[in-house]
Length: 151
Length: 151
DNA sequence: AGATTTTAAGTGTATATGCAAATAACAACC
DNA sequence: GGTTGTTATTTGCATATACACTTAAAATCT
Image (cartoon, rainbow over all chains, first blue to last red; front, top):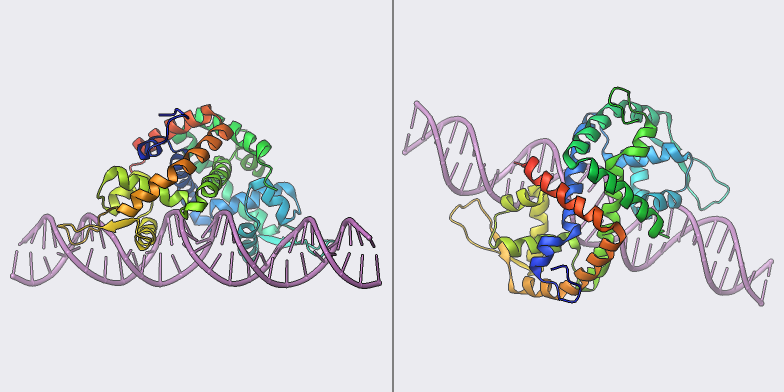
């Protein structure tokens, strides 16, 4: 029952839980992109950050985290791994606390080389989930961006 | 451009990548459920498995993994953690390789106690994402279940 | 200017996740 | 019935993720 008056049951959770479904689809989709990107030695999680970095130019971790709704400590480790691989580089900043980073030449090369694999995965996933899901995902994403500011 | 003839660009990835959006929404939603469940000392990832275990009765890891599209090694560790907490118990099986498990009494108690927190998170997420997204997620989930059998 | 508060980022710890390889038990084949 | 192959699960390793806490630097306040 979706009746808010009634108390939920374990069966309701099994039948309706949004997190169950979303997390399952997320696993399947992530694996499809990761499979396609494997020959390039990059995972979709890092490609996401690299693409966002390409778009934002030199950007501070905190700013990136707001955009991606990512915890700063998570980004910190990801940045370190990608820096170690030479895909991003730290740039100086007037504020001594800040550690802005940007895409390196190698990072841009990697992205260029990854585009065909990305396209294949993207098409595979679009076919799997259907265009209506993708449309609703876009709307939901906008709503999330507007609603939860993620200090 | 969504034109399959043309080569994708980095801007296309930033503007269209399904994985970026899905993973972001997944992070936000997981955090909402985890926040609600924190007082109970369980995360939504484990609650998912507990609920599936409640529904399936004694179940083998491989069978559970097919249902949830989870890697067997991932489930193996999750089961170990939940067994250590007393929420599930291993049951004997004729096949010496199999390690079927079921919900324990304590596991069922935990689920019962977690229901109100789950309901709050579920409503919060439904409001955030909108009913149309939830509908499409359900359709997409069915398609994933039918399409990718996940050996 | 000096003390306090706020902000930016990194560290410690824990869970979640998946691939590759190892292990163990069953099944099939000759 | 012993060898070979298959299946079920676990382990080793690496990344992704977040919370709590720490550290360092800037901003504010008096």
